[in-house]
Image 1 (cartoon, rainbow, N blue to C red):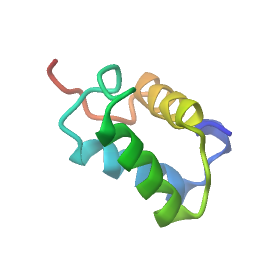
Image 2 (cartoon, rainbow, N blue to C red):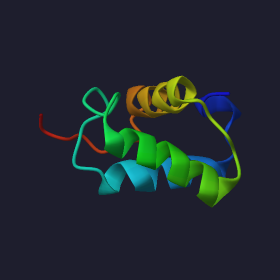
Image 3 (tube, rainbow, N blue to C red):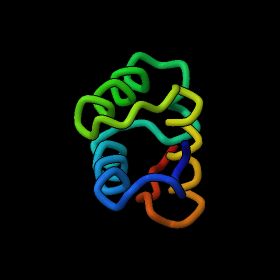
Amino acid sequence: MGWKELDDACRATLIDMYAKSELTVDDLPYTPQFERMCAEFYRSTGKYLTLHEFWRALSSARKTGQLTRKER
């Protein structure tokens, strides 16, 4: 499951979670914060994404301009 398969509410949750993060999409993988975000996404939406699927959804959201740009 990826960005395209998520409904609007799940997309909004993902965007909001990323906005609260201090790290960029590229810096998130393999961090405890990333794993917490993925778990919180599941608790909030009931949609289970693997860590890889969660990162791909974030990456796709970034590519479509849905995420705010952060400084590295």
